[in-house]
Every structure is written in C-alpha cells, then in structure tokens.
Length: 334
Image 1 (cartoon, rainbow, N blue to C red):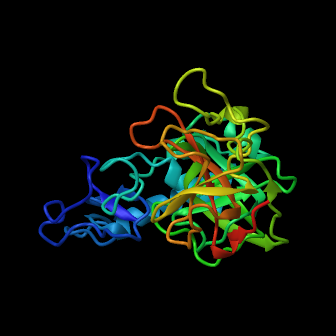
Image 2: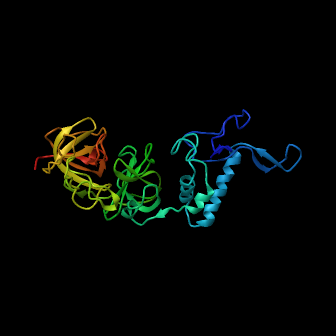
Image 3: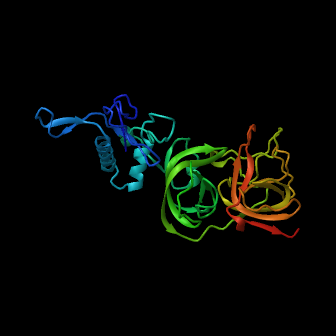
C-alpha cells in the first residue's frame, strides 16, 4: 500500500516535510490517504490525538475496506477480496497499473457497489462488455507457464470454448497444462482476440491435460459466437468467415505443407489456399524461437487456435500457436 495526499497524488518529500516520499516499485498494489492523518496518540500539546503522515497511516484504510467487502460477501475468498480492492481503485497516475500508484487510490464505495460477474462458462463470459470484472472457476489450463510468452489459455472440459489470459510480464510460475484454476480479471480484446488482461490465477487442482481437436486450416478461427469476430480468407470483399463454431483459444491440431518460413513464424497450407493478405498462403504458425520446418516439408502442428491483427490491417488473420517443440512434427507427404 502506498500513500496519497489531499490532491489525490502520490505523497512526495514535499508532503512529508522532506522525510522522503511514499514507497513505490513492482510490488505496489494500491494507494490510500497517508498525508497527515488524524489518529489517537500523544498530541504535541498533551492531547489524545495527533496527525502523522506515512504508509502506516494509509494501510489501515485498505484493511478497513477489506473488512467492509467481507461484511457484504462473507463467502468470498482472499483472492476475490484482493481483486475487488484492485479493480475498484480509482486510477490517479499513469493509465493502468504503474510503479508509483499501483492500480490507484482505493474506493470503498465502488468496492461495495460494483459486482464481479461469476459466469459458469467461458462462452458466456465472452459475451460480456469489455471492462467487466469476471470470476471463472475450475477451468482447465491448456498451456503451461513457460509455453507461450506473456500468455496462458484456459478451456472448457468439453472443448466448447477457450479463452486467452494475457500478462504484462511472464505468466505466474509453476502452472501446467491440465491444472485446474480459478481466474479473476477484467475482459478485454487483445489484437482481435477476446481475453482477460493481467488476471489473478489460483490453482485449485490438477487433472488430465486437454486433448487437441483436429481441424482444417479453414476451420481455425471459428465464427462470431461470443462476440468474437471470425477471421477472413481475403482482404478484398466478399469476406468469408472461418467455417464452424468459434474455436479461438482452444487447443487444436492442424496440418499442411510449409509455404513460407521466417525467424519466428511459418505458414502451412492444407490445400485450402487461404489468403490473409500478407502474400503468404495458408495459416500462420507463430512459434517464437521454436524450431521451424523447411519450405516444402509437411507439418502436423498442435497449438492454440488464435487470431491477430497485423500492423496496417483492418481485419484479423488466423494464427496457430504451438506451445513447445513437441507440438511441431514434420511428417511424410500424404
């Protein structure tokens, strides 16, 4: 907890008579008033109250807010209370989280009046407006902490839908495909893909890792279900949506002949001759620095069905994201 002043800004040495400013750094969550707060104690003139600045004065405001939240939601977990404090704070410095003010100055009124939407399914979650705070329980991880930089993916047991969890830095350590997790966060759209940005992820158990769903190149990307815009086959009209139910965020398997290779991606075509406007034919396999097949080879790829909007493009293109080297297999022509 950091300390804010009467102008709703971080306390500096000017607020504290030259004795330094409020703490800051990567560990900071929120701010609370900490500039000359009245409290019990031996006063300067022998009274029973005095004013003092500091984060020692700011932290009890947050403790009190937590107690208020629990009084309204006695069944909430620590993680739910913690997230409610963060997501209802008023942003007072740079937009979003920053090292000087965290998520902002706490707001007890918002914490008691704004609700977290507890939705039973991922697909129901994706229909909610951007910015909605959501709580998903007992979902299955389809990726591990070290698989895809800055990303995790969850999906339903029946493979009906999946969802991106996006992080400003590395995902939480120690999570593996097949783990059961609860997820708290706010909905957003990242390069055309529906997801939750910087969520709190709590492991609640382990299960069998999900199996990949076989799909042709054309099926990747899915349709517009759950307010997820489907990808297109051509930049020029008429634009054709990908066939089938929405599958963005699901673990899938697709295949094809490699048509183009670069440092951190390659294209493969299974005969559908898809054209996403980049000049390459097939579906883009975005694999970071994993090994890449050669042009002309045939590949069988397991990964997350996704999309992205390239720079300068008005539409999303299909992307298949393998998780690790084991997801990329060179196969004989067939």
